[in-house]
Amino acid sequence: MFTPFALLCLLIAIIESMAGILGNGIILAASSRSCIRGKTRSPYDTIVISLSSSVIILQSWISVDFLMNIFYEPFFYTKDLLKLTRIIFTFLNYSSLWFGAWLSVFYCIKVATFTPSFFIWLKQRIARLVPWMLLTSWLCSFTAAIPFIWDDYALQRNFTAPQHMTNSSAIRTTKKDSLALLILLCNVGITMPLILSVVSSVLLIRSLWIHRRRMQNNASGFRDPSSEAHISAIKSVCSLLIIYIIYFICVLIILFKLFPALSIGDSICIVVMAACPTGHTFVLIWSNPKFRAQPVRIWHHINCHGRTAST
Image (cartoon, rainbow, N blue to C red; front, side, top):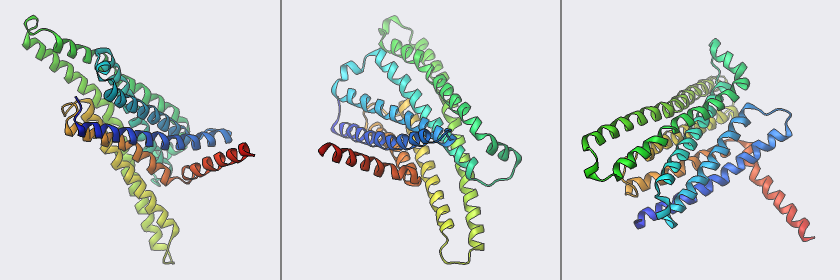
């Protein structure tokens, strides 16, 4: 049974997810338009299309999931549906985390001005590496979701079995071993994109800050547009990194059920988790002129069609 606070949090999460779907639709439309108009698809557009598509599917799934929770709770809590929900939720979340990490890595490789030979080698080959990076993300996400196929079933079978038909110590041992393996596999799958994102973001911020200091020392005027652009880029990278870390923590809390279902902590975590992809999306839109121009282009296109239809 939902408490008023839990119901309010679910409704807020649905609204946040809808806003995220809209924002990612803008990014997807702008990136797809660039790919259609260009002869070749840029690595950046490839990563962004994968990320925005993944987040659209994820937030659509979350919205349906929450609506099922609210309006059709008895059907939602069937054994098979719970298992399927956990598998899809894990795969989509991990895919989004991986794509977000690769976006940070791409920014770092293309923008940072480091001189080690390995970094220069990556700069020259990043376009060919991007498809393999994305394929690795899908494989890692699918591998991380596999344990939920057997673990949920085993745990539910143990919990629903009559007490006099089971050995309690054996149940505890089975549960402990299953959860230990599950947590190990999931943490391996989810820690790597976090490390990639943190390291690449820190390196990029450091490179931008050093470059800005050099330009300040060489600047003759009071206002330097290049320096302001670097400050804006640093703010964007810091914002994306903070949102990424918060989302990572919320995903772990939800997956491993650290709070009781529909408790205050669980409800707050659901709201924050739904808000993070949306926040990430709008930071991307704000930091990229191509994405900022897309809503105006869509609105102009709609107005033109409306005037044509009225005449």
